[in-house]
Length: 151
Image (cartoon, rainbow, N blue to C red; front, side):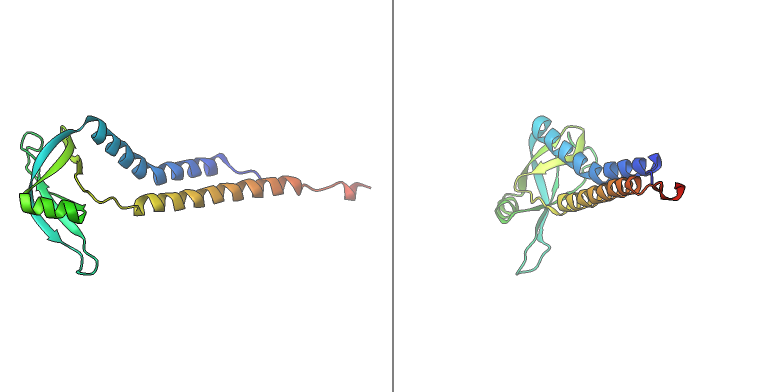
């Protein structure tokens, strides 16, 4: 049984779709680290959105008007030390791309590994699918009819 080109194309599209968000996220983070400018942003709100047992420290900050003319408030989860420092000072250090206020890294920002973990799991499933397709193809080739009925 031959695997059609459309099946291979579908797998290729799925690989791109699964990995694109992670690749974009990594690319943006590297771009901010290399080309961003360091600024001090005003803290507009500081709250624990978790519980007493499992705190989740969140800040909302506003970038200087030169970098964000709309003066939006940007939320971010930070570690306890960064939260305490920002809540006390009323400001937080931020590295941001000029012209892209959504591309920023806040000092003490918490990074979650759920997205990369899901991407790796989906990649493993796609690899398993590819291996199954290959195995099925090689099994189909070996199971060709023999010449027993011709005698």
